[in-house]
Image (cartoon, rainbow, N blue to C red; front, side, top):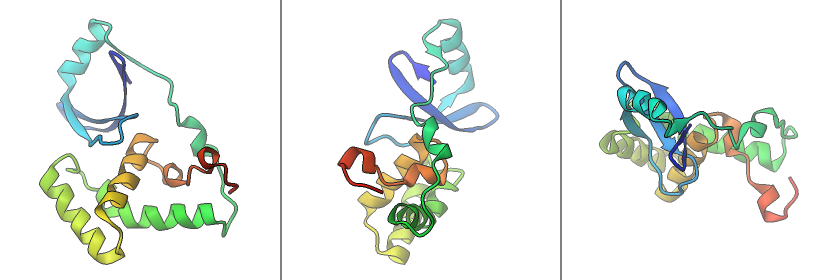
Amino acid sequence: MQYEQTLYRILMVFDYYVLWIKVHDDKAFPELVEITELEQGFQDEVLKRAADPYSDIATVIPEPGSTAQLKRDENYAAIRPLVELENCYEPKARGKVVNQIMTETGKTKQSIYRFARRYWQRGQIPNALLPDYKNSGAKN
């Protein structure tokens, strides 16, 4: 969805709220927005559907046993408790799960949030966690 000039991805829909996240914001967290506010945005033509900039990753099939596949699977397994948390928009609940993940995996808070954001922002699929080799010049 594009609201004014900002691209958002809807993560969950509740009875009266939608959980969404800014797609191109390195510091974004999931936020609740009232459905009535979105309806008004459509009426005022400041909210509209937008193309998914990450639609191509859904069809990527990493080579079995490749570094890309191993990193994707390891990082998804680590953040899974966080991204499956229904109230991930609540800082206290989110923080508690992040602390558990840090203890269990040894990953830093910064890494956990970076992977969770990438997962949420890129379509809530494990492939969202594939390394961005195309941006580094490295080969996968």
